[in-house]
Each structure stands twice: as structure tokens, then as C-alpha cells.
Image 1 (tube, rainbow, N blue to C red):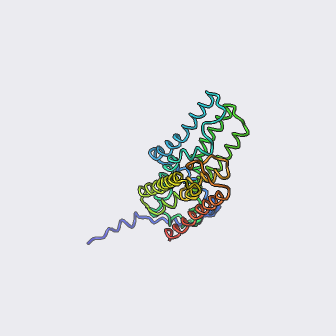
Image 2 (image 1 turned 180 degrees about the horizontal axis):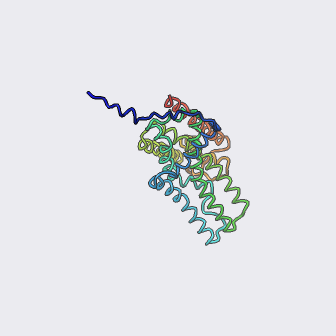
Image 3 (image 1 turned 90 degrees about the horizontal axis):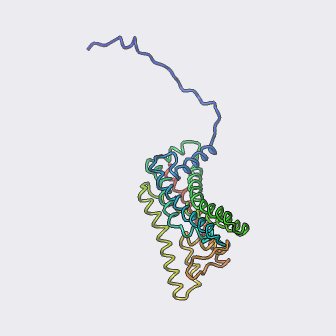
Length: 298
């Protein structure tokens, strides 16, 4: 068979080489901040397709609408107080908050698990703790924005209605503390549940089930205890649901009105147990996420 010798005369081999990078090394802190910012933007669909923006933005609007209506009513009727306390708003809107967590917690972690990109993160100057901290902080920040925004609307509206500045400022501050704690707790629970499976649909269903079934079960048991005149057990039953944990803490320490049957909220001593359980759950969620991603990143 004849060999074409002309190819050698026209072919060229270019040695482009690989040059080392002599610029600044931004390191773990920069990588952690970048992952946090990207995850936070993703929680509201920013930087993603228009379809991804619909649900989080819709839920954000749904959270704001009742607050705007209350402000309009208070201003128009020259009311002496707002229709709803700042600390009660998140409790009343818990279904919207749970739906947001269920939709965005899997979005934050499921794709990395499904497409097995987690080891690629750890091939860079970023460790398991950095990844988990960035994801945890991003979802908690997104939840805080969701829950604090309507409180800001209520506060501004209260000032426009010329309600007492000191009372409104105190209530607003108490509401912010409450939703900050709620954001940390719900973000941790949502991420732990979503990190169990790479399938986003399963993650959404599991988060909704845990948040709603636990609240329904606890509320039912509290109602039964109230009907049977077992009021002393009502606060202790409230330890077994995330939303009732927050309700109990703000009742014991933030001057909120309890949503428990009969208005029987925890005392200061029982409230201390609520605080310990809540902080323990947040810490446990963080630890479970660390263990989960150490295995996945291998």
C-alpha cells in the first residue's frame, strides 16, 4: 500500500505548553463566599431559567400580600394596633414557608448529588465544612429574607399609621429574632432531608411530609390534651414539631401570644428546654450534613 509522504510536509506540531499560574491565590474563603452567593441566588432562581424563578418569587409575593393588606387596613381605619403581631406572622404563614423550604432545599443540594459533582468541589481548595456551611448559610439567608420582608412591610406600615414607635420597634425586633431562629432550624432540617436522596421530587415530598405531618400530629395531640384537661402536657408535646418549637420559644421569651390550644404556652423554664432542643437540632443538622458529604466526597 502506498504511503502519502506529503502529509509530513504540511503538518505542524505546535508546542503550546502549560504555563504555571503566578497570580493571586484566592483560597478557601473566596471559594466559600462564591458558593454561598451562587446558592443564595439559586434559592430565588436568579441566574437560572425563567421557569426556576416562578415558584420562589411567587411564594415571596404570597408572603408579602397579607402584610400589605394589614397595613392598608390599619392606615385606612386609623387602627390603634396592627391586626397581627410580628411574632405571629410566620406562624400563620407556616404553610408557605414549608413549601418554600421543600422546593428550594432539594434545589440546593440534589443536583450536585445526582450529577456527582460534589467530589469536583472538594478537588479545589474547599473542604466539606466549607461546602456545608455555604449551603446552610445560603438557604437560611434566603429563608430569612422570605420571613423578614413582610415584617418590614408591617413595621413601615405601622409607622405610617402613626402607631406607637417604641412598641412597634420592640415588636419588630422580637419578630426578627423569631424568624432568624426559624430560618436556621428550617434550613437545617430541609437540607438534611434533601441530602438523603439525589432525586429532587423525593426530596420535596419528604420535606413537606416532615414539616407538615409533624405539626399536624403535634397539634392534634395538644388539642386532645386540652380537651382532657391535661394542660401541663401541652408545652412538652410542642417539642416534637419545628414550628411549635419556634412558637414556644417566642412565647416564653419574646412576649408572643401562644398558638397552643387554650393559649397555654411554655413557662420560662420550659422555654429554656425549647431553646436547647432547637439549638441542638440545628447543630445536629449541621453535623449530619458534614457526615453525609464526607462520604459523598470520597
